[in-house]
Length: 302
Image (tube, rainbow, N blue to C red):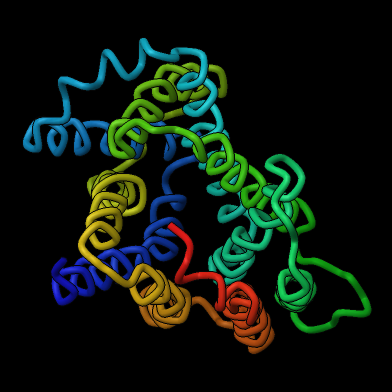
């Protein structure tokens, strides 16, 4: 294992993910959420096809799909199709700082869904993390006026929270998938693209007004939110003996993202957004704590 290489790859992924909230807003200035999904998915699929060809994976594609076509159809409909349409619409309705911060609660949602669908145990610290994180979501959504429960966009908040359900559902569906993860992601895009094109035609999307800056922005989203960055992150995890050290790098991302949103597109970051985000991140950190019993048992496992 190469720890320095793993940290470098992990940091590269985190820094790229830190830019996507800004890229989302720049892209949504010219694209509808469905148009954005369609164009970015095509870019992502092309990038992943090139990566799979260069790494000798592409020949696995037909056999992987044919081994369980209905399963991969469902995966593609959940992510990227439903997830990204929902997420992009949330970004369209909310300030990017709010949408991004609320979306970070997906790991808490995953814990609850894994308990329900996979029968996993919810520990005491999971409940503490859950309460803390969702209070953080309310602080962000109400701009600190928690008791009023007044939202700038109720639909935007609902969609941002629904996106966490879709993303968590995708990983639950993917939990027992033994196929190459990059091939699985590529199959998701290949499944989603025809449906995205049909949705685009159904909404009567107008593509003529989109200029060069818009196409550059959506290409960036396709490459660095939905494509290459996923490969960098998987490579980082593959090259480390300490998965937690690499995984914890992701906590840097939302704070860098807020700085970029403020400096590049001039978005005003409400103090309550920062407070709520810190609460969500604290919840995620608490969730990672192992109980004494688990720590004692850990060396004998595996």
